[in-house]
Length: 174
Image (cartoon, rainbow, N blue to C red; front, top):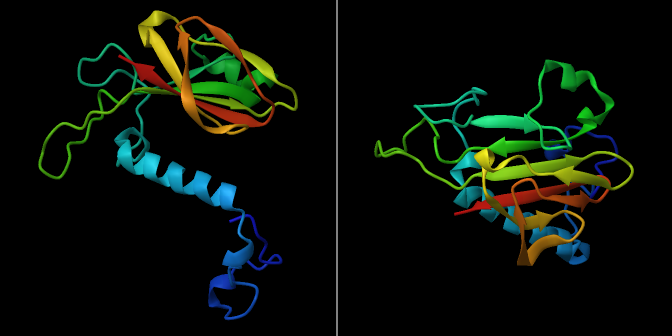
């Protein structure tokens, strides 16, 4: 948690200050953010899939289990991956058609999410994909602001700025 091991990649076997945590001086804001992120992941099975994504529609669904998008909200193709903007992109995660059942054999359902990654050194304007992928999205996390207490709603095709070197998480609204 925001500390160094002095270049030692095997610090787990060290019983000294290299591997000790200084809980007194821990960055409390980072610790709380991490706690919430772990809890969020535990509550959303789309982030804990047991099998690889297939990149296609699953079980008769019309939408892919995962899809990658450009800044302009267009689904990426092979050519797009070689472009410079591919450092900043978005990914759609379909929580409605998770192929593996839970331990009781029941279908696993979750919300759909749209993750935006801006690896550029300047803010970029991102456009959401068309309504086919989701009509309304709630911005719930922005790594430059943390977890958002008041959700910002954005319609399909809407655009907004994403700060440099940050991640934004959107959750599809019903």
